[in-house]
Length: 404
Image 1 (cartoon, helix red, strand yellow):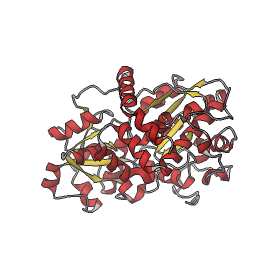
Image 2 (image 1 turned 30 degrees about the vertical axis):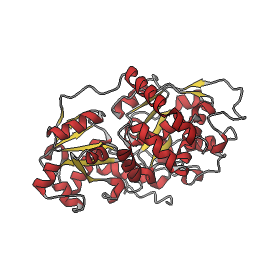
Image 3 (image 1 turned 180 degrees about the vertical axis):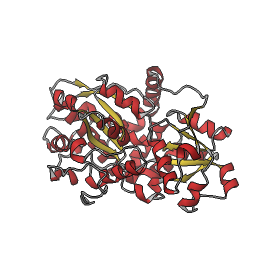
């Protein structure tokens, strides 16, 4: 596999930068936020055709939303059920600031973590999922905000890995191509999927890094046309630096990008490229209904901090409900989260809002779609079973708790 490193500006991962950006956002939007603040079936166990290690889950609650407390009861002003309780610190790390992790940002800004008596320091952005897993596995952080690819890889070597919630039920990686590539190959967003994939043969394509969800999409797509993305294209690792990725596409250092939203929407807004292939747009049938953005931890952390983990799950649930029930307010928050302008954030919202999880509960059918994708992409030789990896009892217990 060719995975080269393009010279580019250093990824913005340092703590000082992120703190400065957060303070700047807070200053610009404090008044606006205050004005807003008031306001598939289970499927079959044989889906993976013998390749998937499947075990029937012990709890049927996991395939449907549990009965939960009213998330509106927990607000930034606190609630009676948690009043007087000591705050617990949970250390969280995250891949990047893609749309995948917007619910976490909303939970921060709306005070849901505070209402749950949690102290959540601003998470470092580790750029690639493998680093997030390594940090959580080593005990440096309690929770990872990542993608299911990371959880699968972790679970195959460590039985203590646990997914404790869904935050995005759509594969929000797009293939973005330069205007030049479109002109030379004659493809566009309306072309057939086969023609789009064939147009990528022999091209230089930017990804976030090896083993990432961005590389996984290319591997999967090329296999659909009988090609090998490692041999039939040149992949360039750019990290999760959106600015560097857009600059590389604009300068012609790469012909295309396989990158998380909002990069595609930003490229279109700036006139330097177009989204050619988008799973959330329905372009890739095998990825419809895929659970993608997840939160994960180890069983040892669940055992050591059960109440704090439950509180984290509830806070994210409250954020997910807020996003679904308050689209206008959610768009304002998204604009400040992305920092790319209202036009870009509106485009991102239109493309992805329907795929933001409405509950942390992970539907088994969505899990199966993810497992099938990873098998076909060759990312795993065997997918961890749903009952092994998804902490259904932990999720359901948190959402059914009167502590909400």
